[in-house]
Amino acid sequence: GENVEQHPSTLSVQEGDSAVIKCTYSDSASNYFPWYKQELGKRPQLIIDIRSNVGEKKDQRIAVTLNKTAKHFSLHITETQPEDSAVYFCAAPNSNNNDMRFGAGTRLTVKP
Amino acid sequence: DAGVIQSPRHEVTEMGQEVTLRCKPISGHNSLFWYRQTMMRGLELLIYFNNNVPIDDSGMPEDRFSAKMPNASFSTLKIQPSEPRDSAVYFCASSLGQAQTEAFFGQGTRLTVV
Image (cartoon, rainbow over all chains, first blue to last red; front, side, top):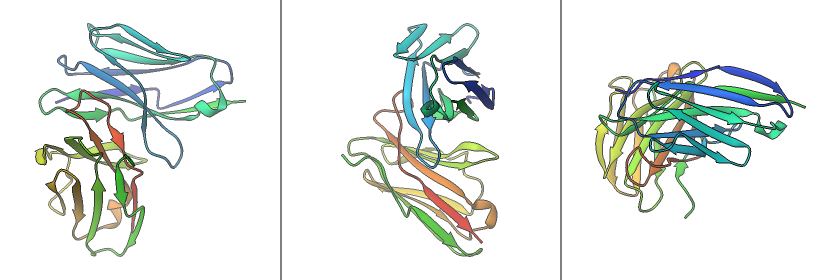
């Protein structure tokens, strides 16, 4: 089955700086890698995803990169703002059962 | 569509009581997931249904937990008897297709067992 490791568990940055969160996965057959943002007291919501046929995807200030050989993918947030403060989760599918496994989460704090 | 709907939003119960959590997935979605979220263990997958059939229940903690999906628009997660360590936020999520597409989460049920 899939095992998803996420680092760091907490990250604090100054407003305007960049933030990078990394995840590794174990199932080489996985081909879909989403990132979810969960604000305090709310539900996780998808912010960006990438499929294994591309190496990078951008959407304004956020980007995700994928290295299939090394089996890791990263979330990059540039020009961070206080409203980016949240817990971010990476996920990867378990190719055996097609269910979605989540990383442990990264609590990002952006200090104004 | 109103999104994934969970009820109740909050539940406080005494140890030993039966608890039933409910979920209505987004219409047309054929995959449904139940997750449990705690500070210590993060987001844990409890059970996954595809076309109303349980595909993976390896995450269900023990026999006290059971889940059903009698039709495409309704699922329940039952805990009997409940214990204080079951206190957590329980999320239901649905997706179109299997795990290769976006999962939409409900607002969650915050369960407190005293």
